[in-house]
Image 1 (cartoon, rainbow, N blue to C red):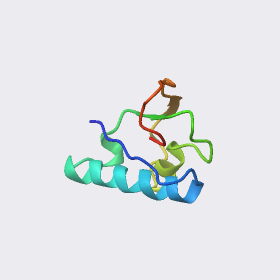
Image 2 (image 1 turned 30 degrees about the vertical axis):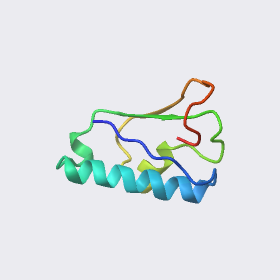
Image 3 (image 1 turned 90 degrees about the vertical axis):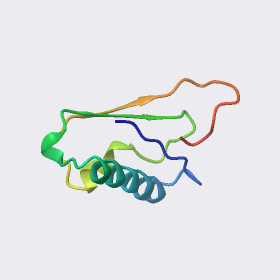
Length: 82
């Protein structure tokens, strides 16, 4: 399962809300709960510095699932703040 969001600004609260909305939608649409998950992999473009995307999962109560954050490649012309 994969999803993506583009942020309007690099601000921790905004990132938490948008990533939280995405996680909630993905889980709901696929009828999943935290116990169904093995791990979650988050990526972010190099222009995002305000927070870890994975923090949103912890904020939703996903506390026993391993999470990892990685940086997307910095490619000219790529979509920003994703």
